[in-house]
Every structure is written in C-alpha cells, then in structure tokens.
Length: 273
Image (spheres, rainbow, N blue to C red):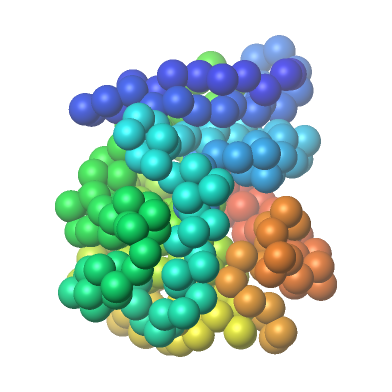
C-alpha cells in the first residue's frame, strides 16, 4: 500500500503526518509504530524508516511535532547554524536551560532564532505538550482499521528518542518504546511506565549515554523492563545514513534488535513491559 500524508487531530491542534501501511490480507490487522523524528522533522530518512517498518508488517505513523511555526524556523539551513554553535559548546548544554540561554546570547545574530527554537522545544512545558500530542497520535493510529489497537509501540531518534521515552511515562496503553540516543525522561515519572523499553546508544555520545545507568536503575527499582545496547565507536545519530555520524556496523546491528524487540513486546498476548 502506498504511503500517504495524513492530518492527525490532537487535543489542541492538527499535526501533519506520514503513514506507511503494510500489505494485509482481508480482515487482518497489524501492530503499529509511532515513529518520532529527530530535530530535522519527518524528513526523507524518517519516511524511509516508516516504509521499512511497513515492509516488515507494521503500520508506521510519523507525525510532525513541529507542525506550524517551529517547522518554519527549524529549516535544514538554520539547524546547520545551530549545529555549528553546538560544536563549540559543552556536551551538557542542552540539559541546562540557564546555561543554554547564556550561551545563545553569545552567538551571532543569525544563529539566535534557531537556538531560541531549540530552547523552546526542550522546555518542560513544550516537552509535556509534545507528549500530549503523541497521545493523540496514538489514538489516531489505534482507530485505523488496519491496526491492532492493543499492539502499538513507539520509536524515536535523538529528540524523538527522548519523546518516545516520555510518551511511555504518560501512555499506559503503549506496549513498547524504543529510544535511539534520546535523553532520559524525568526519572520521577519512570514508575508510571508500563511499556517495555529498548535503548540504543553510541559510546562516543557522552552527553546522552552517560545518563543511561540512571534510567536503568530507575526502571529496575520500578520493576520495569529496559534492555539497552551501547555501541563502541558510534557517535550521536549513528543510525541515520544521511548524516555524517552514520556508523554502519552499529546501524546494521540495531535494526534487527529493534525488530526482535517489537516482535516480542508487540506479539499477540504479550504481557506489558
């Protein structure tokens, strides 16, 4: 079935989305995957991953959480300016709002609008809002006749990896969540997670990977399930084959791990994580 653009009604707004469905026999349904984008939005790479999931028998829906004003600011050219700035910044900058604001004020004027957008999307209020949007995405996906309502998981990369984890803290119906090099959710919220978790990280990405043991310990104390793998030699965004940090060996190992994880955690009758 050809992928198509969709409009997703959420609580407070409409999101654009990209939907890829598998070929199904009449009367059959498929498990669903909410596919959450990087800072670049649901670009050609995310759409290709959605089609890969469809080829494996999953209904994959990639919403654009930046629909609207943010989409106009977070263009590839502006993001490139921000990345130039981040290359000069300490690795923990994005986790410290006060330090981030101080750093942004020192940057050339052409970088400041996109740095301001980065700060906005990482604020607690914005992250909570995105999580609520994703609840709407889950509801949209579950209402499709091709999708098994009880077998829906999420997967995200970078910003999307953080949102995949955060969605698990607010969505008790989510069965599984994959985190590709995303920041931890608030650890105080971990006991609310019902989904099984899989984390995939690069060893050369200390600002993210260094916090993984904290999440693992919080999940363990809460009695949950968190499998994770740290890839030697891999940097941030190692799975994205359109970006300079692509690490082929790690990406080739990660994809079958994801498929195996979803095959187990989204199997009919599988217990919650």
